[in-house]
Length: 440
Image 1 (cartoon, one colour):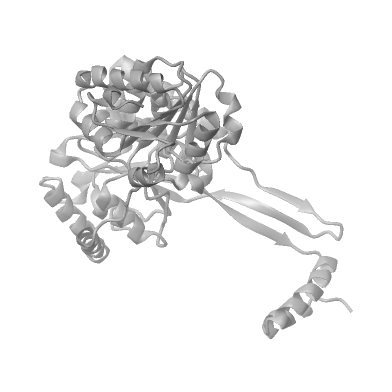
Image 2: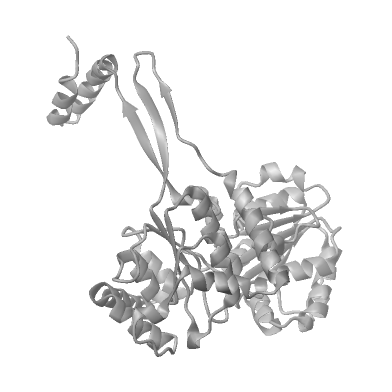
């Protein structure tokens, strides 16, 4: 690949045939999401304050970090009527778009609902599994410049479908600015209570509870480094969804997709922030050059062009591979959050894809559709964690309990087995407990 093809755009150029390819790819993918000691110390201080002083600490932190003048938590609490007011106040176009997105997300997640099951053995013993929802879920929604009503829908609707009894939402309001779309989305998604608090203090409030904010069983939703650090700190006290890194996309193109489409697909992730990652893989060298030219041509037209430029320079890349098989190897090596198979026949590659958060098939399926309204969840594993993690779903808001109901005969049969194994572990109380049920 000639260097002259890339003079106009500051984006990494990689070829799998280069001797240093693996080293450069490793450096490109490296992301350390762990906060430094200063951030951790500040988060621990905030969590301790909330644990000790509850609402008083929440008000203090909100006034300090979000530049508010609240006197009590009542000023930082929104009821269902306020959420409905926000929805009614939207334009008809916005209401319809939110409603359509919400319904598609709901229908998709309805299909995820697991059911309880059981079976009866020959001796009458019953074994099974009971599925139950969490009692209360907490949704963290970014505020300020990063206001995402789509995030409200994607986090709250699966909880609602799962049967969670109460859904609590926290959203910071820097300088007291409320985002009406976010509140309207909360109304549509079935959120029960909203508190206009954010940061580590909001995570601590949901994890430990205060006089105003109820303790939840699980916290989900994206946030900044302080939110991520706080979620890690309270894990175990409550469940969490994940520690998410920057957004990322990997596009694999066979050379037949409009280069401008692909450039904009890459931009759609790069515009999130300077650490977001946008990668394009193809075995067609001239196609990569065309996409690179489209990037240079379209970049100045973006409102967030400086963020996109920095993102592409820091973590973006155009990667030339040998063939389709090598492209598949790269997919599974990278384990992307979003994978676009921008090809004439994406179905041929799909069975070989082992690691990806969400897979967008064909030339017409832009990743942005998945962010808003396709239906599947947009809360996805980042930073290679798709190797062992899945998208957020109904199952994240439910628990599974094992059911064991022994008949008299079954208890006798199992008792003999358990007795031998327990005595082998020198746990005689275990053995004797089982032996009491053995029939002579």
